[in-house]
Length: 412
Image (cartoon, rainbow, N blue to C red; front, top):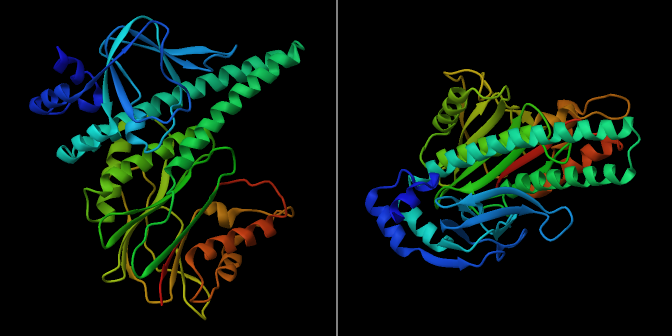
C-alpha cells in the first residue's frame, strides 16, 4: 500500500521498485489534528508531504478576511514539492488539516540522496515542473481575464471604490509572485572560474518579463552560459521562459555540446505544440583550460567582442532559428577562443530597440560605442556601465521591452 501511494507522485512514478521500497521505509510520519496548520505561506520549506490518510486544505490569505481555499489534497496526493527543487524557496501557500490526517514527510536531504542514486529523476522533475507551469499559465490567464471583466463592470456601474481596491491588490500579489519566480531563476552569484570574470544584468519592461539569463558550473573547468528572450512580455511569457530555462538547465548536464542541448529542448517544445510562443536563445560552454567558448545561437542577437583599444564588433555568424517554431532546428554553432583582456557581450534586443522620448532607437552603433572599455574593467562593471548609458539615453521614456546583458571577460 505504501509503495502504491508513493508511485502516485509524478516525481517518483518512474523509479525502480526497489527504490520505491527503500524510500517508503525511510519516510518520517507527521500527524495533524483537524484544523492544525502544517505550514504557513512564506515559511521556508524543506520537505514534501504525502497524505496517507485524511484531507488537507491549501490556502491563500490564511487568517485574513480574504482567506481562500485554492486546492484540497486527499489520500495519495501531496503538498510542498516546490521546496525540494527550489533551494531556500518560500512556501507559496498555507496548508491546514481539514480533518485528522496522517502524512509522510520526505526531507530535502533524503530527496538529494535519492537524486544522487537516480540522476535520471531530474527529467521527471523537469517534466512535472513544465506541466505545473503550463497549468499555472492557463489558470493565471483565465483569472486575470475574469478580474479585468469585474473591474470593467465596477467602473461601468460605479461600484464601491473598495471593491476596486481589493481586486487590484489581488492582481498585484499575483504579479509579485510571478516576479519572485522569475528572479529566483537568475543566478544568486556569478560562478568562479579561474581565468575568467562574469557579469549580468536584467531589467524587465513590466512586473515580469520574458528575458532570462543564467551562468552555472558544469564541472571544475566548464561553465554553462545562457541568455534568452521569449517573443512576448508579461505573465504568459514569464511562465514560458521558466519552462524553457528548466528544460535547458536539465539537458545541459547530459550533453557536452551546446547545439545538442538546444535541439533536444526544441524537439520537446515542438512536439507539445501547445502555445504560439517561441524563444531566441544563446547557450554556450566556456572551458578555462583552452579559453574556448563553444556556443549555439537560436535566432538570438549576435554577440559583440570587445577588445582593448578597439571598437566592439559583432562576431561572424551564420543563420539560426528560434526554439519552438520548426523541427529540425537550424542553429548557428560556433567556437570562439577568448584572448586575455577580451570581453564577450551577450544581450537581448530590448537593449538596441530601446527608444528615447524623440523615438530614436539606442541601436548598434551606440551600443558599440558604449561597450568600449579597458582591459582591467571587471565584467560586471561593463554591464553596469551599459545599463547606465541606456538609462541616460531613455530620459525616463517608457521601456518597451526587457533588457538583459551577460558579459564574459578573459582576465589579462
